[in-house]
Length: 264
Image 1 (cartoon, one colour):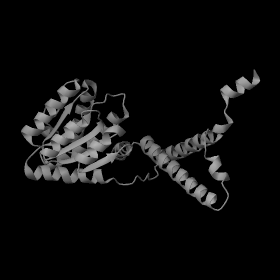
Image 2 (spheres, one colour; image 1 turned 30 degrees about the vertical axis):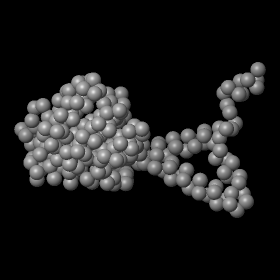
Image 3 (cartoon, one colour; image 1 turned 90 degrees about the horizontal axis):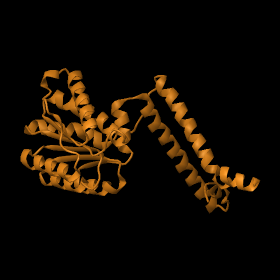
Image 4 (tube, one colour; image 1 turned 90 degrees about the vertical axis):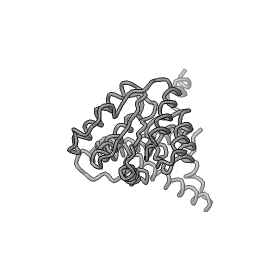
């Protein structure tokens, strides 16, 4: 009976995972305290974010709109939350530069929240009256009906910049390829690993996986989000260092550290 309880409650082969979790929690708590204390939380600049201003500037010069696609996620998905933060930055830049913005929504609740975020961005830019009703508008919750509507807009209006940020699924290739055919600058960020190859092939810049969340945290400047990204970076750096050290130790005839990193 005792052995059965020990087996169900604690597996000695996974002690290293427990230690790793404890270290990450420590990193997270430390960085949250740093962020709330006003410390500067550095996040590596992303090329895709730098290209946003360039794309909006090009659209302004050409007199054509910027199309922002927030993905097909609802408010329960992290990709949607990151997309809302990024939309705030995009809307502010379009307001400052006097460029038209179009945001077709998929989920009605997320669309309502994005409309509020865009209005707030225009207000902060001092151009509240320039916000065009219907800039953020609901289309449909039918996946490929949404694709048809957005593709039609791309072909009719020929936006100079297409920005895909959020959770995308089977529609990703249809949208990205249609935008590519129109000659628009395309910037994408997606948290669905299976869809990233399509964006990489059809877009000029792509935020890969968790870079979408880093972008949302960087633009939103919310302390807890910044602290989470910083803690993940610290944990990755520690893991990479341990792998390198274990490889060197194994090459020198001391495989003990490498064994500690294994799980069964």
